[in-house]
Length: 323
Ligand code: AQP
Image (cartoon, rainbow, N blue to C red):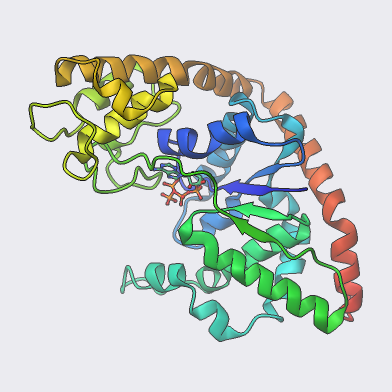
């Protein structure tokens, strides 16, 4: 059984990515799971090439430093030729209307009227289908916002198989056990976001301890006296309690009891988070300091992922009458 998950280097990894995804992959993942840095997904809107390259490398290092086995990771663009070829076959299997009705496309293409939406934003779910189908993934853990894309991958796999011959595993979307959505510390109505324009409310995995303390100290709280876990009425406080609970392996309600004031709670959150992130931060930095070693892991990951997909791609090209 293969389960495939990706993370996009659209910015530096933050505590939401770590607690909500990466740490769980490392702790709860099974041996057949695959994790990839989806750098091609970060190109559908304006981006900076050097930064993209640096962040892809940084995220790869963070995945490994977090405890994911090096033989389970790869970087998507290392397979750009294979994925590009399969994307084209799948684009020629996909109806325009199917791609155009994706909610994420409608939302993101409408956000800035001054900049024309790129065709890549329209076809990105097809690229995602290619990632999934190339690796023969059985399961793709996704949040609500990505379920529609896995549905598209299922539809394309079925259509290709019934038109040309059985090549692709039809993947299933699975909903991971609910993880608290870490919210922005400066605006707890929003989720913590890699590409947030203001980083004051975002704690990055590589932030230095003093920076973590400063950001937590400035976190918006709700001005109410009682330190209770009430996410609807006190989202700022609830966010801090959820972060602390995730670090201590307790429930937010349990941890809420222990602190007489916001200040003492914030100190505890900062220290717990610094301890939680310390090995990830130092591990990431030491992998980044030994680029040859990291590049070797990366190259081996690319070879493995390419080999996994090779026969599917070749069969698909042959059955489609090309290549
Ligand atoms: N705030 C969050 N709390 C909990 N989990 C989160 N994830 C993202 N933000 C939070 C989880 O991280 C994994 C990888 O996410 P992604 O690379 O697909 O990015 P995203 O979900 O689009 O959100 P980001 O990281 O904030 O990036 P941008 O700014 O590009 O939107 C996923 O499992 C996701 O659920």
